[in-house]
Length: 242
Ligand SMILES: Nc1ncnc2c1ncn2[C@@H]1O[C@H](COP(=O)(O)OP(=O)(O)OP(=O)(O)O)[C@@H](O)[C@H]1O
Ligand SMILES: O=c1ccn([C@@H]2O[C@H](COP(=O)(O)O)[C@@H](O)[C@H]2O)c(=O)[nH]1
Image 1: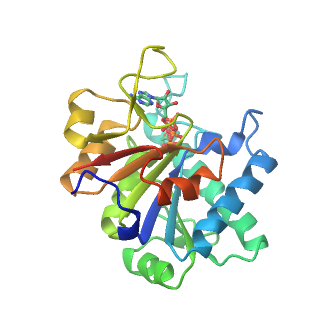
Image 2: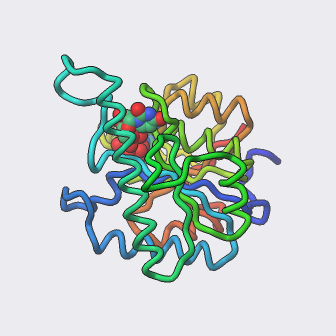
Image 3: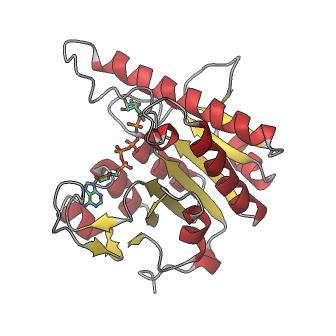
């Protein structure tokens, strides 16, 4: 059944981590304690032989679309946001490398002295070699988000699932931070999410996933050990299916 999460079918995983997760509760760019636990959680997944690609957001450094000064050029602001995702990927990969994990960092934007340019062929081969791969620079285009970049990379690299790590337990009937009557939804179809405009992910990301039958699992990363839990336990988080 396509609407039931089956962990045994999962091998190649695309993890989307919001940039803000890296800040922890301190509101600084990088909370070392949080990043230490997050990288340990990533290593646990890696050690269980999953192929792991990671798209990091940039919200701990800069978000173009919500920048307060609307007189500035959105395209430039979005470039700053995309560059922020490269910085986050470099930092997270460096911590993983210091813990003995082989990583590859790719970027959709040319920053050639710093990271390799993304191509699906290079990325797929690095995943097959067991490297933890970071896909930075978002989609490489303004007016998009890293949620959409995560789904795009997952589709292109034929991942089995997008795991979206966030700060709520999964999908709710309304934003749980704004509506105290919002109830948790354990599984939903893409159509339902789009029709009801459920805002845990942007609609572009949802529709790209729907058009390409790419399932998504949304889960809470406030406790980093939930990462392996979300992968292996059907009951954890929300499964969004075709
Ligand atoms: N129906 C909904 N179910 C669950 N969360 C929702 C819903 N609608 C809105 N949200 C909000 O979506 C947020 C999760 O999205 P996400 O983790 O992408 O945050 P973000 O601030 O957009 O980060 P980033 O853009 O860096 O990925 C939650 O904090 C929650 O408040
Ligand atoms: O494809 C993309 C992805 C991101 N951006 C810009 O980067 C920031 C940070 O990404 P988040 O997904 O919000 O964490 C985003 O606000 C955009 O300004 C982009 O332009 N294109």
